[in-house]
Length: 363
Image 1 (cartoon, one colour):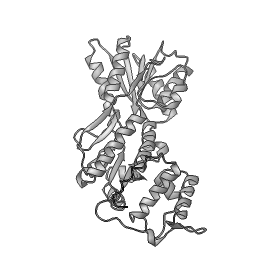
Image 2 (image 1 turned 135 degrees about the vertical axis):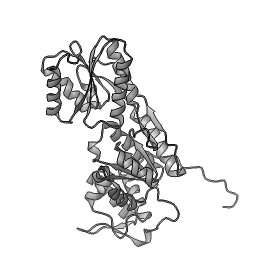
Image 3 (image 1 turned 60 degrees about the vertical axis):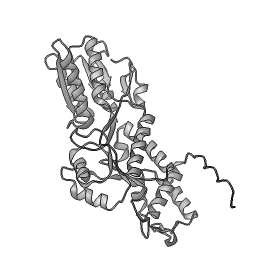
Image 4 (image 1 turned 90 degrees about the vertical axis):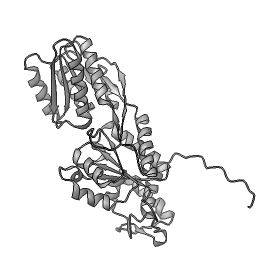
């Protein structure tokens, strides 16, 4: 009615995963990303990173709301009256590019993506998860052109820190944020833990406790945050006035490989009396293997984990470790992704968050 006061805004609601999935599907239909029919269940589950029961419940919501028609043994058909292509700029879609499925990501990335999807869905965005190892090859241009060209998005979130994929996004001008640590000369906005400061702090702590032979254990093919970890470790060693034996060890990601590496290292001259270990899984392997060899922790060898995971909290002795707050990380990540999507630009500067130190009993 004329003269009536405007209605107050509706309070925000926390949506269930089914509702979030339905909104993502609806956005894909509305934007014209899917035409005629939706992809099969397996493809949708992989893209949206949800289970089949969740997807089927979301599809039922779309059917009830008139977006799709469902027939046995056929892909859901999109009803034409709801196919409304957007005009103007890109659709409200945030695309996430990863070299591996969600279950292969580090815990912080997995938790942050979960929170990111929830926050962006509440803001009206669809979040599409793309797993494409070809985009992380040494020559990814063709794969990236096909993927990005076929998936119009407001912004891209890049998982991982390999140079070729970063350089392609710089050269193409496609909006993106890196979840990780790109090389300093690559002008892309990024967010990550401050691994350099963490490993510098951990190394200094061990040196102050009297250790004179230290090792840092990193994944093979050191780059990104792992390269920053090595840098912090060596900076702390270099700043110490006494002679220190230091080793940068690269592990292959397998339990047998880590065990062989540890055994070979401990047969060498002046073996380490302290380890800084990247990733929760390898940390657990190192601790349990040393205990199996009847090596006392920390009396004989000290262990500090650069990273955290829920299962480390249940270990005994309690693991000395660093832990980032996933909620705080996700809030910063969501803020910069939305800003890039809505404003079209973002300063190419790194955001580095400092994890909290948990003293534990192994350091």
